[in-house]
Image 1 (cartoon, helix red, strand yellow):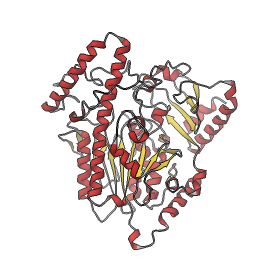
Image 2 (image 1 turned 120 degrees about the vertical axis):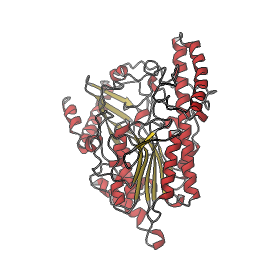
Image 3 (image 1 turned 135 degrees about the vertical axis):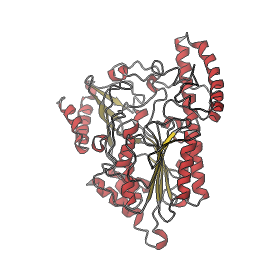
Length: 512
């Protein structure tokens, strides 16, 4: 009931003034949804790794959300949450298993907006193992997609290979659709980026962009995982998990079919020349374990950031189109990612764990005339909030079945924000493949995080985020934390019940 009241207040505060005919047009909505792109690589969030001027522009002209979290830090489930506004155990997509199958006929944001006369489209990465439903237009990558000469599935279900670099092509197709859409209707468009997903293959023009930069190791890069068994047992370290051929691109056979074989001869020549130089450096350090680990880290960051650079440039293309076509003034633009990512923190790449770097996700948004430029939102937002908030901002009734809250009041700082959430709930499932991360659920408050691991073993972890921002010191079982632990467990139990997570409740009850 509280979520319904919050949405009602938002609806009234944003649309009750729209009484004249000049003010009744619904906003266009553009969501740019990237893959594995993290706050640490966005300059609007204070990144020292790279500059992202176009993502920053959205934040500067609108709002920067500083505490946005995901419910399940993994690719396909996060897309299902975006579409449904519901947790994984409700929308039916819990992991990236090859057997996954998202029900395309269930309630989704595009179907709701279509009923309100929106023209809807999804272009780019989809990753849900079933074709999109309920969109007026879609053109999507099969599964993960490829960086070079990627295949796209068209609406007639034909799979067509297109020449070019995937980030550029996704923008091309999105802009083509915007140009040819029904201009009598407002639009809802999701641009699903493949970047910055593994194995981080930059556009050739960006390959050497960060070559002269030496990146400092994160403070917890050499984590020994003391007191955190799940963190110790994973398989996602830069040291041991990263592959020399695929990830670090040494000794590549460019004539072999696959992601490198898709390149044109010109692209292969540029890549070979660049990574042949990298191999020379590798040979200098390969027998020195510390030097080799640092070399891997530098190579990882250079490729990841160069891949992100192309995406930011293409975001600029889309923003420029909105300006040039006169659409910008009545278009909500959102940039976000499916989750965060480890940029060497804990010695890792990838995501999954409920630790901060992958629990958080970037979120910036602009809406001229509605959001004051330079707005900063510090309240806790969760990705189940995306769908109901977008629907509400469109002036459409939010289905009561959606589990998120409408964050519109946070933008206008109305009094209802004092009742905003103070804690969020998380549940991750995928085990053992591909990175051997144990399933777990937990609660994050403004200061503390309590995690319950299950499956291969039973374990609790507790962190004081104020004193231990890098999450190295597991306080669970500390007598001084007994009262705090008990209080967090009660809050966790309440959230499990609120979100109707029966599987988690069964695990939780084994400890009582």
